Length: 270
Image (cartoon, rainbow, N blue to C red; front, side, top):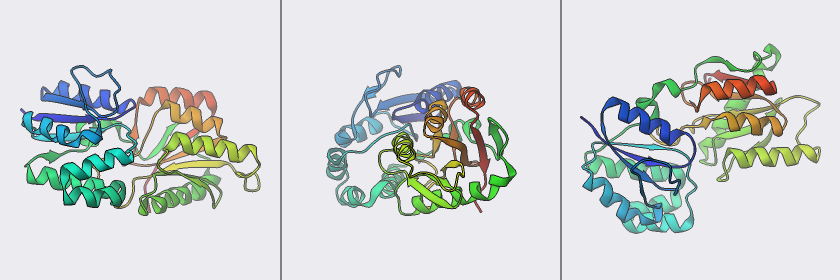
């Protein structure tokens, strides 16, 4: 039997992962790092309390560790990580999310803990290739959709974010540390000011895994709220990197996409 620690962030993903672990019959420890308060038996610790978090993992005698859900890492939390992990933490503090992931991997290797991705716990959450929800992708938009996915990966290559909005071949806005919802709000504001159009071409939201990002942490994900917010921003198509993006409640995504006429499609990179 595995002894699993779930590091839980915000959103729908963490409860899905917790349920999948329990269904397997594994022993589960849940550490809630965002104070969500809705996960049975969870211990709440912030990343600023990295020393206490490490102690909890060790006390559980964790064999497998999985991270699920959104988290925005504050400067105070990066300081806490730096203090807990010494030199490795100081490097991670300034190296961005990919640097943090590398530091976590190093810690797990030293402590003989296997890092597992959400897709290994709940593989049915991965976006397939092809049509996912809403109207089929207009063949005339296929090239633009592929271009949008390539732009998303280019943005991820500099460790900025996982999402972009494009119109035709023109990038409109890119995700930063504020996340996808903030990106969509910004796109709505740009559109209202007449700055998000490109000769009437539709807006496309693309999400892709960062090229250097390990698969055990922070895979891109969408839920039904993403579709709702995309529609409010004037987005017509949502393009996901197939097999590298998580669908949180596919039935709800399908329902909202059908209602709002938003195409959701999975494409392979390259």
